[in-house]
Length: 222
Image 1: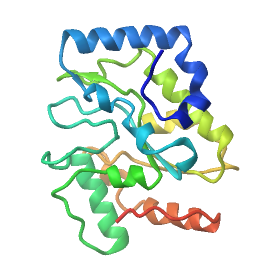
Image 2: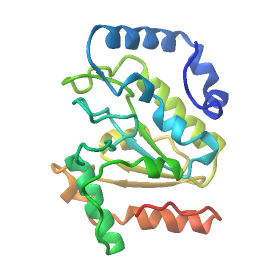
Image 3: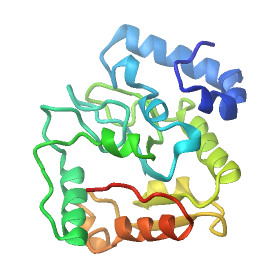
Image 4: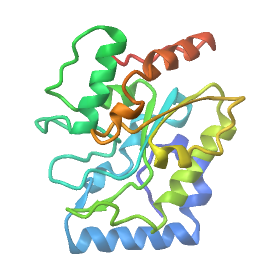
């Protein structure tokens, strides 16, 4: 199966692409995209992996589901391309960054591509969705695939930072070896929950202190 994904990921996930569940998933995704509007556009389904090769990952942020409206999802969790304004959860992420670093963030852009290019794997648990139907592609195999992604990073890399915001992300990262990696947990940045522990979490500076302590270049969050 010719999946357009960076070779470094094919090397560690090759068995997933040849499995029965992935063949079934691929068939479902082809049918969904062929019979309706789905997001992200096909060329962006594996954008997180193509922007952040396996051996370049420094940190991992785990989202749940791609944005399901027009001109939003482009394969990186929480991120949107211009001219779409930042969605509410991303606005709250910017607010936390402003609080930690004491500087104003340009809130007119929601594009987090520079984070991905700098080693932040912006991973959604489910990589596709139908227009206007959140979680419509869940339970089809994406979760198993992204579990394998987390497992590969956990087993074959050291000193990564996993930023797990909200219960869904925390379940996804439950098996991460805390003796090999730093796991940071907080409430989801959604307006419904950000005030219950996301604001004030200090995750961005904490992540960089850990990376620097282990001889890894810090992430340029701002």
